[in-house]
Length: 354
Ligand code: DNO
Image 1 (cartoon, rainbow, N blue to C red):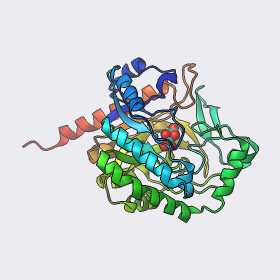
Image 2 (image 1 turned 180 degrees about the vertical axis):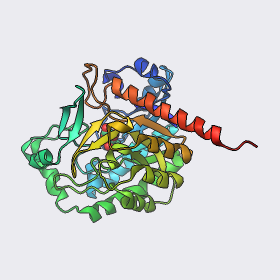
Image 3 (image 1 turned 120 degrees about the horizontal axis):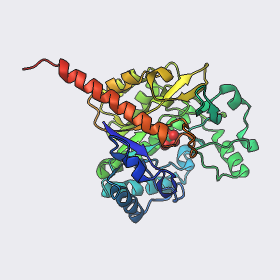
Image 4 (image 1 turned 30 degrees about the horizontal axis):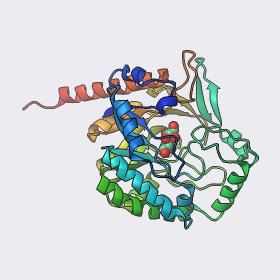
């Protein structure tokens, strides 16, 4: 596996030089952030990003994300124009040698939490999702401030979007996703870019909007939309693992053996109720996910692709982008690399000599 780190570009308070100092760090996960959703990314901007990262002796391993315009998810007539722009971005990314693109198909909201600075017992803070708190929020009243979400929507835009989604149930969303996949994957194949859909986070419908990339059965349905290996998955332990019915290491093995896992997000979450969870340190004992089993699964199916420590807590007084500080994610990276080294050496020691 190739250890990578998410970097938000020039505005990220964490420099590439610092990221490079994390032991075993090889690659960067980034994106172009100043192009409106739906427009094609110009080739020179991608080249600029790539060379900036390479001059810090890191590789641009993954683009996360190339966002999907809402009209595509809604299946509006304008979707063809946006899909063509998406394909153009993929061609450009392929041209400069980008291997993996992560994206998601969640209506309106990306990852969602009820609080970004919940104090944990050890004095650190973490992101949490509390079912009751979310149930009380009304996005249409402007009560939301969510990370990772395009807050440039006005209240009116949002009301219009919600109205559009009234006719979109899960089946309709599947139809619109299939339409998108069937147009985009042939281009991804030609450009040799592996597409890796991110699971919905959390993996259930929120605010009355449907979500479908949520569990094993649906991931299976997803990969069947298009038989190409270019139609693959980002396996995110924190997203899928938030549902107690998902056995994440088992799912990882299953889809990994099928050659459909192209990117891994490693994050631990502590389940604290039916649909409530707290993000925790990466260590197995800190949360509900057995990180040893996760890395063992990757090792055993021979995963060679990128992995990144996902959200960290805020520790040691660090301030910054919630979930995306330096310290706890750096601890996560070294822990994951440590697990891998131990598993790998143990396996070599035990293999029969010829
Ligand atoms: C959260 C991330 C997500 C992810 C997108 C992928 O921290 O894992 O925001 O980037 O959902 O499109």
